Image (cartoon, rainbow, N blue to C red):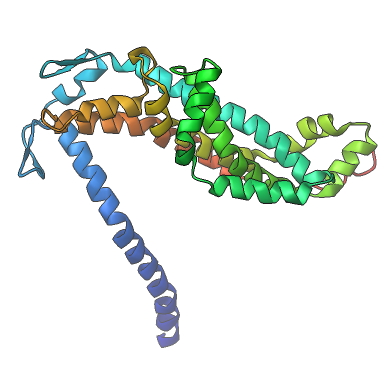
Length: 288
C-alpha cells in the first residue's frame, strides 16, 4: 500500500507543479483581460481599478457614431471591413508567394540558392521601420499612397522572407518518395506542388496564415503613415484616434473598442489552430 501511494505521489506532484506554474504565468493575463472586460461594461471605475455601475453605453460604437467632446468618430463597421481586407489580403498573397518560393528553395537546385537563403534571414532581421521614408516615396511614385493595397504590398514584402523560410521548413519535412511517385504518374512540378504537396502542407499553411493575419489585423505603423483618408482607416488608427491627446479619454469606450478589436484574431486562432495539430504521413504509392 505504501508503494502504491508513493507511486501516486510521484505522478501527481509533477502534474500539480505544472499547473501551479501555468496559473502563476497566466494569472496576470487573466487579471488584465478581466479588468478590460469589466471596465468595458461599467460607467467609470473607482480609483481606476474597481468598476462602477453596469452599462452598455461603452459599446455604443456598434450601433451609432461616437462623439467625444467636439470630436465625432465615423461608424466602426466600414473601418472593420478595411481592417479585414488588409489582413486577408496580406494573408492570401503571403501564403501564395511563400508556398511557391518555399517549394523552390526546398526542392530545386540552382545557382545562388545558399545566398538567397542567407539573404532571406538577413532581410527579415532588417528593421522595416528604417525604410519608412523610402517606402513612402516608392508608394507615392506608384500612386499607392492612401490605399490599402499599398499597405498590403509593403507588409507582404517585409514579412515574406520569414514566411518563405517557414514554408521551406515544412516542405523539407515532406518525404521525397511522395514527390517522385507523382512524377512517375506523369505530373509536372506545378501539378505535383498543387495536387500532391500542398494538401499535405496544411500545418505549414495554417502557421503562416495565423502569423500573417494577426500581423495584418494589428498593423499600425505603416497604416498610420501611408493612409490619411478616414474612409480608408483601420481599427488600429481608430483606437489611436479614440485615445487622442488623453484630455478627453473615455476609458470605458476604449476598453470596449479594444475588446472588439481583439475578438476576430482570437476567433481566427481558435478555428485555425486545429490545422496546426494535424500531421500528414505518406509514402510511395503501392502497386495497383
